[in-house]
Amino acid sequence: MFENKEGQKIPSVTFHTRKNDGWVDVTTDEIFKGKKVVLFALPGAFTPTCSSSHLPRYNELYDAFKENGIDDIVCLAVNDTFVMNKWQRQEKAPNIIFLPDGNIEFTKGMGMDTLKDDLGFGVRSWRYSMLVNDGVIEKMFIEPEKPGDPYEVSDADTMLKYIAPDYEARPSITIFTKPGCPYCAHAKKLLKEHDYPYEEIVLGKDATTVSIQAITGKTSTPQVFIGGEYIGGSEELEKYFKNK
Image (cartoon, rainbow, N blue to C red; front, side, top):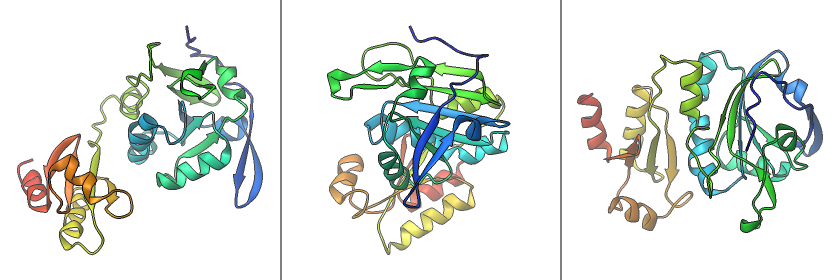
């Protein structure tokens, strides 16, 4: 059983990070002391749930967390700093602090280490999130101990709901676009006008026409999804906002 450590101090650890082609050691005191920090830990960079849901939603809701008194958001995984830096760039998440727990010191100190040798991963972190106030754990959301990779309670929306119960978070939005598409530009303008932050997937760079056709049955752009619901192109997006 993974222990809930609410009310306890976080482990004292030094993380070895790489910044601007140089090594920079970062301590837990530097990250957590005198701050309110949300940390979410996951099994590994570039893995499916971590890349498709866990990290992107914290990235989307970054401003909402800041508005509600959170100083920093931290993503931790048992990976080295080169992998974490690459993942941060790919996910376009410069505002989130990526901590490489390559030596598993923090994860073991939290008692959240788990063996995933069936996947060839070795020792990794169990998936969880926590609110840390001046180095003391105020709240933890630990995924249930089930086979596989459960993802039920450590998500960004659950944490934000705990911090700000009355806050109504915007739904997750994804828009498929292609360079030079005027309808795509119009759709993005609509989303910005309505203060809807979005994830943009550019055909030819982040995905292929085959991918969008497999998902929507269409090859035209843009194609918009809001809260997991397929909306359609720019005309359908206009109708969506008019009917709200």
